[in-house]
Image (cartoon, rainbow, N blue to C red; front, side, top):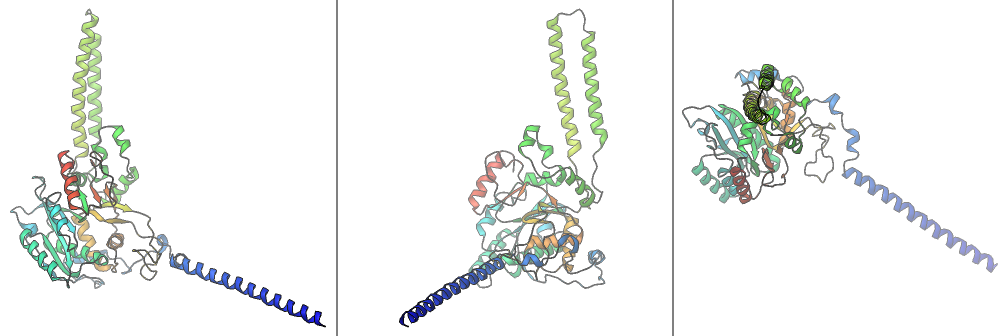
Length: 460
């Protein structure tokens, strides 16, 4: 009997321990599963399941054709549908005279620097480098800085007012100057330009930590589709500076961005060059056949002189043809929106990201094509169409995405150029020859040093 009770007790003890072990395993498994689910949810894995396919379903408020409304607004007429989004912040500092200072009010370029209100040193560095308004005497230009407010920092506000009084190049609007208000800063810049500065052909928006080559900007806006290919001296240089613009980009640019109104290349230029070269060759061959009875040394000497003369002549002809072929002037009605373009970029769904976006904010799996906000160039027509189309585009807190949404609704296809570097391009003395912009120059002294060095080399 005692043995039976002892066996029963041991069996019961063993069973309880097994059950506890199993319970612990189950609890650990359950906790592991819950942990994995929470982790996946944090990284947005489940959100992707509920995303809507962009290519087939994209619409964004206002959900309808806005072209007639935009045209009405541009004509100062009342549109059939009231705007859904207007940025009604007041201008504290207006600088209305900035674009009208000369008797001849026609400008070539206006640089709009989106600056943080406290970045006094950066603005000074820009004024002493690429922001110099008389950089090229034949390229009328203006530089303005757009800032918001720091309502609780009276010292910074007072210092800004003093700076604005000295340089008269600061536009301030009544919104809090913060990262997530960059869309407001951008659209208030548009608003100021439309109100006070519509007399320029091109407008370049730049962050205050960018290196800019004004020389390359001026060259780019004359012939965006071929920049910088037509500046390169050899196939070797071409191979060393490969970019993503391909022949298909030129077709898209001509057909969509230029609306078939851009200047066309004249095939007779190439033909005339070919014929000229053929005539020279024929003349050379005939002269060689007609030289009889002379010594070989004299023949070789005359051939050498003639070849050198033809090389010089053909080089001159080629350079002239290259200038005719590439030195263009874009028509005034071009809608150019150019910079570094992301074509198939996806929203950040992981919650720790600075750029986290919920499905409620944006339900699609891809963004529309957009230009990185650090630096981009607009023609006057693009500026006006984007500005008035924004009245019918729901606000979005990231300015580059917002302009991408506006461009999509306005049927403006952004034009890609890889020489707009949205990162800090590694610097060597000769690596910035074709660079239009490079990001990441928070140190004003570094900006001044590099800009002065590039200016001395003829690249800035």
